[in-house]
Image 1 (tube, rainbow, N blue to C red):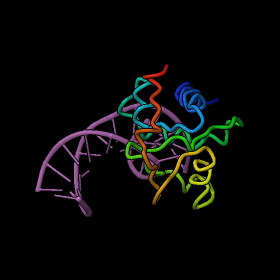
Image 2: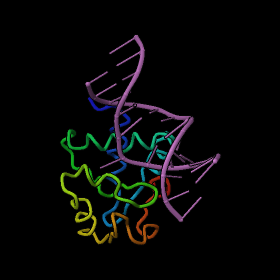
Image 3: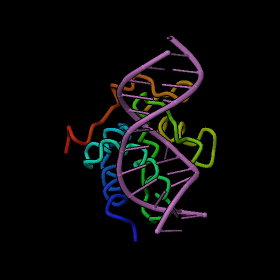
Image 4: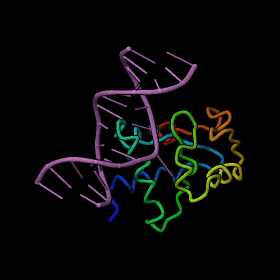
Length: 108
DNA sequence: AAGCTGACTATGG
DNA sequence: GCCATAGCCAGCT
């Protein structure tokens, strides 16, 4: 039922190593739809519907901001998940974002 | 079927 | 340097 686009997004996000983060734009570009960064987040919106665990907390916007933390049910859920993996955040933004950044196109 | 929405990004003022 | 506007694509109403 999930479109190929959704499935690809999930596949990439699942391949993000623990303690690393990626961006919507990077994933979108890897999928071939560089202009559809919004769709990446939109796809993650249905990650719970897939029944598969998707580390969506490892996906942030290009500034390293936890733009989608409000979709995790708690105001600090995403932040805690990242912190649990060793990713420090400050004011909803990842510290040393470039250091944690993981580009699928660069590793896949 | 047609229009709106959105976890983005880039550009302009 | 910050706020406003536009472009984008795929899913949802």
